[in-house]
Length: 228
View 1 (cartoon, rainbow, N blue to C red):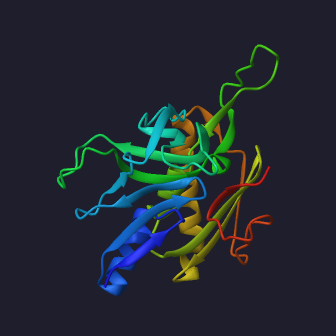
View 2 (tube, helix red, strand yellow):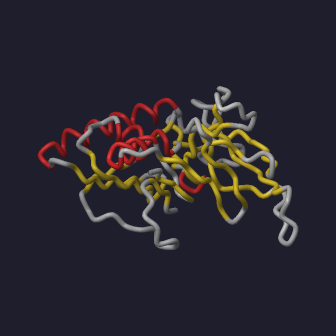
């Protein structure tokens, strides 16, 4: 048996959990309306389908990881409705290590989500731009994900919503609620670490155990989301 993840972001922890629970490998199909972008090879690594697509990569702006890219896609074979230099909203991390399967196609180490889900923080040093605006720093979803996953194994589910540049809400579901306050402090400590690394201020971070909410527009459950 093989499990197939399709059209959704598959983080490492979820992948490992699924493989453990079902005793089966998890492979990915990276596809959307824009085209068949990538698929998992026999070695379990996700390759870009460079035989049918041309991808241009732009630096996504993560100072801690320059391998995270924005993607501009051109479908080489679509005729009826051509896709030419279409800017995807996805954030992908390219793996520089070659794959043992023998393919020379680029390897996607991780799909980090969508650019819409980047959190914007105020600059810690209150830097002012040329037009008098306060400059912002970008906190990538992967660092929010790490801050929660590394805080405790008791976290079963979470949802993080940025409502404004000064307001972040974190909803948690735990195995044992008696550890809630300790876990909240550890998550906040982890987030502060990443915020300082990008010279940003988290603002007000509010924790609760409210029911998770789907996105108002897409109706999909998104774990890390910016709503302003």
